[in-house]
Length: 470
Image 1 (cartoon, helix red, strand yellow):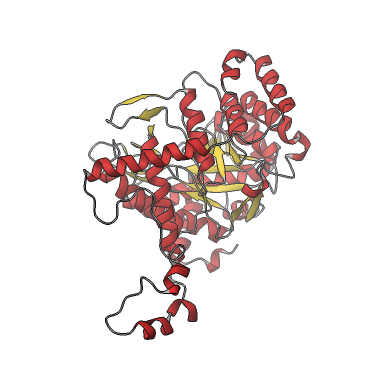
Image 2: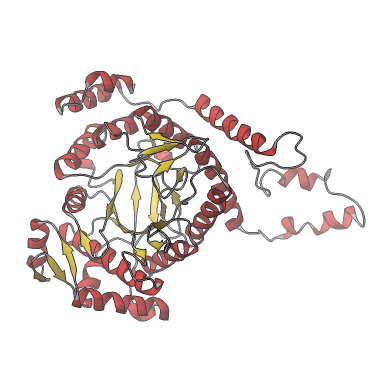
């Protein structure tokens, strides 16, 4: 990593970041973290730490530029870093959006159903976390459901130290606790509180994740005009300060522990003061976040199919396409909220989930570009067909028609005789039913299931409720 090789715009953001952390600093609301900062020579006043550029670069330089995450099924193992892009589930919505625009509290049945749909989608090698937040379920129950219904890389929730330690105990039951350090199995999100704070709960999550060398996504969600300056350059400088300070602290906790530079920063809607998801400014922030992370030699997270739309609508489509395209184009390593999220992170929609699966396929086909070689140029085919001929019956067409063109599963093409809105909705439901019908629960040894259940029952979870999950 070298600041000298940064492009001029990134260098200016970096230098502004340093000025912020040197003069104003960052508040860390945890006494153990304050002690750790002081022990490592960081200037501290109360709960606020002040970093020099040299200190900042030294500590973030200890983080790996890429790392592997290991799934229970090795075919879902992933590399987080470089140009690899991975889609991750939605994270955090407490509500489910119905097709008529009404909202209802998420239930555990929803969580399991979404787990199955993400499990069935080839675009996703990770599953779990806070896909939805049933009000009466803790992060332990959600992880148990994830372990039962998916064998992909694991996303977990975050929480207080004892709650996150319990997650590690559960992962230890499945994978062996001593092996977690060598093989990262789970990730979570550690969010800053913009401007310039990291709260106690997030720091407790970070302390436990770094203790077991499980990768944490340290992310800021600054909102230009409300929690950050209205100008995007200033917003990104503030964002960068928060994320880099968080990564530096993570490296003090455990040098070399895997971390991810997270960007969910966007702008504010200046008419209402609310977050503006799916905005062009948000898309720009995801791209700048990825560029900054890569310049520092860090894996990155950002974007998603995010939107402020209140229903499955035209707005949901164009905003989700914009933000997915921006994140994929920037080679963002982890795209959380890659499908299903709607209404500014407050809801998840079954129908939008299926639509977003299609958008991801379209974006990936677009970014794949055009392959140019003798076979694809097809000069002989063109000459053989000649003037005013057609290519439909050519062997060359048969050979390439299923791999050159994107094959939509829900989009309407050609003539439609009925109501097109109903037709596309029927396609969405047909695909969802097909995915759920094809779902088969991944194998997990019965002895492991019993041990997990006993562990959670000893923690006070209702045995009957656990039995309902499988």
